[in-house]
Length: 90
Image 1 (cartoon, rainbow, N blue to C red):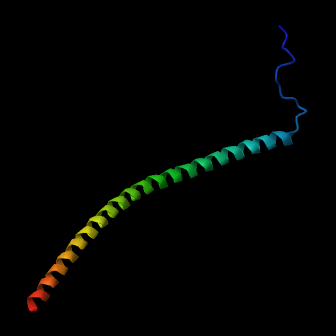
Image 2 (cartoon, one colour; image 1 turned 180 degrees about the vertical axis):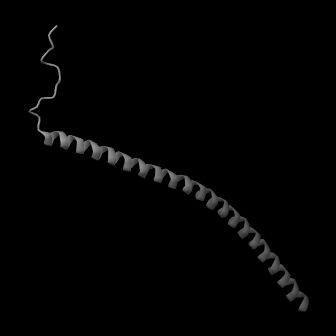
């Protein structure tokens, strides 16, 4: 069977500059992809760290609300004591 002339082959008429340009372009795409992967990994690490910080902030806000309520009750009791002391002096 004869080999068909329609099959793909590399001809000597293809300039070396095109081959070099294609190789350079391929290398640039691989480099860009690896840089993109590094950036994605850094962003994922930041998101994980942010999630941890976010949980801590929520817990701290809850504690601050509890402390604020306690402080309000303490202030009310101090006011009551002051009122009793001022009434007892009269």
